Length: 197
Ligand SMILES: Cc1cc2nc3c(=O)[nH]c(=O)nc-3n(C[C@H](O)[C@H](O)[C@H](O)COP(=O)(O)OP(=O)(O)OC[C@H]3O[C@@H](n4cnc5c(N)ncnc54)[C@H](O)[C@@H]3O)c2cc1C
Image 1: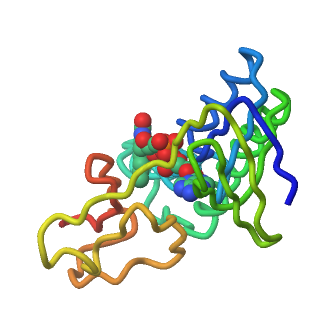
Image 2 (image 1 turned 180 degrees about the vertical axis):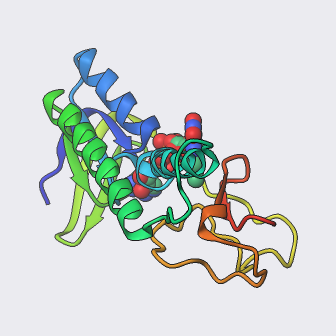
């Protein structure tokens, strides 16, 4: 198996990884960026960006509902359209990151990276396994949330940060007063909850 060599390997294409890769390339290094899923990581695909896109629509909805000059009795949220818009925002920004990576001459490889030794990374993808050598490696693989205590995991009202916001139907809520217009984005706890919880 032929092994390609780079000055720097960056594992993880989230905001930590792709920014580091771009900076290293701008400083003259040959850079390999390995991402096992999608460029942009949690922030762009499941975190900051989709939540803000949905929040903007939720704010608009509440402004219209609360207006004293608009007749907004029958205003409804079209969840399918909302998710479509959110998906479009994410897609546009992701392709922007892809362009930045490409324009900075970074080699992007899609697959899961593991270390064979401190200077050799193996990337496993649908196409098979490839090995890459570099004198420096930046590990920017993100984090996962810890589960606090017992009983909350799998709670019907909670959706952990690994789950994309793709529900076009109202979540299963026991309380009658819960509505989609009551979806609350709780960034501190990084989860979506039904209002009232
Ligand atoms: C719902 C939500 C809302 C958020 N809102 C905000 C906000 O408003 N503002 C803010 O500042 N932050 C926000 N965050 C936090 C933000 O998303 C993270 O701080 C940020 O994504 C961390 O970036 P990162 O590059 O370290 O990790 P990540 O974005 O998680 O990227 C890591 C990448 O590494 C890849 N990877 C992991 N292991 C491997 C491997 N072995 N091989 C190849 N690739 C691998 C993963 O696929 C992933 O793409 C939010 C998070 C969530 C969940």
